[in-house]
Length: 100
Image 1 (cartoon, rainbow, N blue to C red):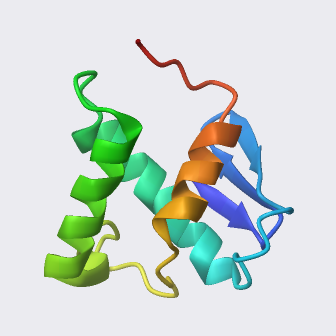
Image 2 (cartoon, rainbow, N blue to C red):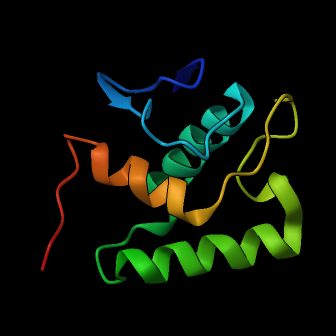
C-alpha cells in the first residue's frame, strides 16, 4: 500500500481514486486509509460482519489504542481519517468482492 498525495491509494495491484474525497486534505490521511484497508483485509474482514460493523470495530480499536491499532509503530506520518473516507475508499476498490 502506498498513497500518491491525496489523489490515489495504491492497494496491491489496484489504484483507488480518492481525488474527489474532499475531506482527505493531507497525504498522511490517505496513507492512514490505506493502512486501515490493509488491517480490515488482514484481520477484521471475516465474511460474517457488515461493512458498518467492520467500521464500528475499527473505530472502537482506534479510540482505545490510537493509531497503533492500524499503523505499525515504526511508521510515521499518518493522520486519522474518518470512517466515511475509509468506507468511500473501500467502495472505490474495484477488486473488492462482498457476500450478501
